Length: 231
Image (tube, rainbow, N blue to C red):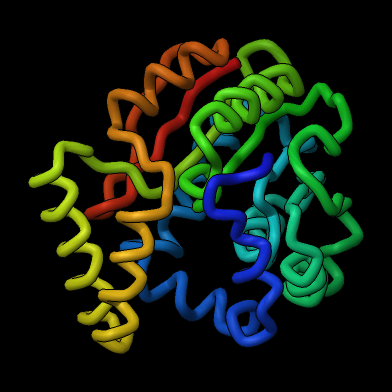
């Protein structure tokens, strides 16, 4: 990651927020477990059995663990600016840490690679637009030609009426999953006012600008979208 408009460090360095991360994510992201499974499948389509995978926004270790459990020969480099979240990732991975190296910082702190694949789940929506362009270019620069890149995060049409509708759907899903209604509404308000969100068309254009090709939408879970593209 690179510095963001919202600067999520304060939130992700809050011990209470860190401890609740995995459970909360599963309640607000439709099909979170299946999204990780799909990301691993899309990487495996092109990557070798002993793939080296760059995971941007690796804090918490949820997707790292999911990938490592499904592919016993993959090795990982993870980067995240929140040290407390990287500490949580180490705990989550346990013995699987033998196949992972975690770097405290942004994507520029990751080795040059080249990597066989990269992923970035639930991270890009925190990053300011200009910094996001640079982040995508830095990821692309670290990939082998033709390597897959999988990303997923909040993305929905940005016309005012449509923004309001999609944010209301975010709230409805969170409440239906057991999230406190007031907390869900406050989260949606913060998302709408503070996150540098883009519509799906702009997301795809930015991937192309960074050098990625053959971008395909593979996931749509209410306010969240996911794409696979190739270096």
